[in-house]
Amino acid sequence: MSAGTSDIPAPEQEPAELARFREQWKAEVRQRQAATSGPQTQPVPSGSATAERAVSPARSDTSTKTATITNTLSASRGPATHALAGAPAVLAHASHGQSHLSPTLAHAVEVYRKAAFHEQHSQLDEALRLYRQAFRLDANVDRAYFIEEQRAQERSAAQPATHKKIPSAGSVDAVTRGVEKLEVHQDSKDKSFVTSGVLAHVLKDFPENLVFEPEDEKGGRPPINLVPDELLLQIIRTLDYASIERFAAVSRKARVLSLDTAIWRDFVHLAYKPPQIADDESITNIVESYNSDYRKVYIEHPRLRLDGVYIAVCHYMRMGSSENAWVNVTHLITYHRYLRFFPNGQVLSLLTNEEWQPQTVIPMLKPNLRMKGFYIGDWYLSGSTVYITNLTEKRLSSAHATAEPQQNKYVFQMTLSLRSRPLGRWNKLDFIGYDSVNVEDGEAVPLPLKNERSFWFSKVKSWAGY
Image (cartoon, rainbow, N blue to C red):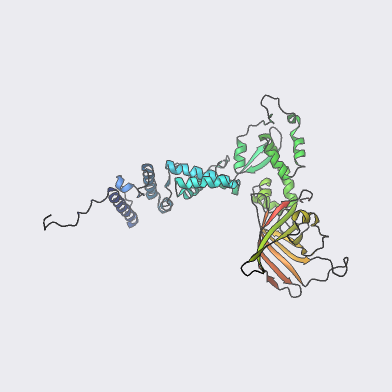
């Protein structure tokens, strides 16, 4: 090599993708400046260098084309649409209301919609699998899904009021909000019911004349078809709600019969009265807030279960003593808390150690029980919050077994949050607060809750609900 030749290699040519990205970015900046510089409208260049949006090199050609549509429509519709198009999800809407998604993103949104549907029906394993699949297809599928749902709602709201539109079968929002309702008449009878959401869409596809089909296709129609619908409804009204839902899963005819408004009206009016609701709250207003769907009210409106007991299994560790200095002894302490609610506003609370198992305690849990750790108080429900007050200990005196206990110096109060896992069960109570109240001056002192656990409901067959 000659002395005049440099040892530094010549710079490599700039990658084509980087150059194209720089030109696209410059074109977009010039376009934005032209749109904000004055009232006049600047024409959008037709070349790909100014119309296409900058996308990641990892995107496919289809995604790039979709981004082009998004950017063009955003520039022509104004700032509001442009802000929406700036979301990472590659999404745009044409003037006729249809959505334009890339094939990959469209498939991801559909998988995400199925996952949300399974989650609403408490099928969490399947929902988790579909969520993972959707996010593997596109990392921004959740934003695209919610934008699509919002657009669908806007289009349904813009429909003429002369004919009602049924919510989309994949629209999970229609299930939770129940915006629209469907009234279906059973055959030629003047019996009707009201339902909403996905169930309304399913019923729309049912044939008009429904019958019970035989289990074996070769067999004749079952004799239950000879029973009039009016008589079947009277029989169904004698069942509890869990049995009615199991019966509804038998066939389409059973599902339609189980939705009769009279059935669920009985449940609602029997359950939702003080202390389940406030004294000044009207059940009529509650029903109207659910579009007169009594079944939806009974499933989704908070209510305490009275046909069983709420049990909390609590544990904590306690250090023990050992003769050997090299050995540490740790004891696992287990205790149970029980809460039983009555329709008259009375509540029973019992705290027991591990020697008293639930199968022994539950038959004893009555107002006449007298043992250490047994309390009687009052309860009421406000929204999804349960308030328990005036918990007073009831136990026998040590001097005489039949003597009345002495006046307690302290009473207790609890505040709990009512939840439902899955929907409609109302089977979980979480501690919010637990206080000790001085009877003389009313001073409330919070008690520690580090060892307390949530209450879970356990049904007792022999206990009436309402």
